[in-house]
Amino acid sequence: MEKIKVKKQSKRIILRGESFLKRKQAPITFLAKNGRSFPIDATKGEKTIFTAKDLFTAGIDSCFETWGLNKPGKPTKKILAKIYGVNREESLLKTFSSISPDFKKLALEQEQIIDFCANNKILFLKEGVGTLFLTEMNDKFFPVLVIIKSKGLEAILYDGKKNVIYQFISCQNMRIITPDLTIV
Image 1 (cartoon, rainbow, N blue to C red):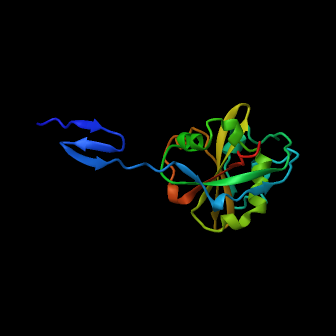
Image 2 (spheres, helix red, strand yellow):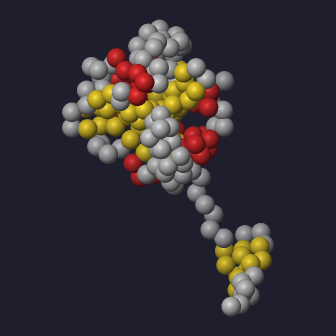
Image 3 (cartoon, rainbow, N blue to C red):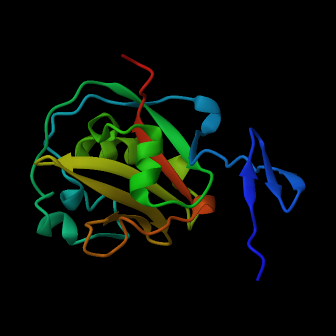
């Protein structure tokens, strides 16, 4: 069997003497909604997703309680949030890292997630579209997935035990909400 030699050049690959253009891979994430910012009001840090049954009427994952996310968070100032779309399927770790390697900058308090969901319900009108948030508790980061179902919004915690944290996400049906990182 003949070995194939691959010779790399700047933007071309030479394979068996023939030249091919390299395909440039799209970035994992992109700013959606034309880069528009969405406000999240100041919070007292008192509300938790686990107790927000009036907002998450389709259900709340019991893992919020199991992992200690049923405790109040910290008060926050009013901020702006950005929405990122996902171009290609990658692990959640790589996907969040493509926005910022500093997860502390990406994390929202639970009450901020509640505020965003309550004040931007129009963004949750399409069934099957998942909206991911990152929250932090005791220096651990937890992806929170909010989806719309026929009964309303559902909050799901990706806790690592479900083997979802490193699995692929469907890029056509996923978006990520983070604080606006352009504001210093």
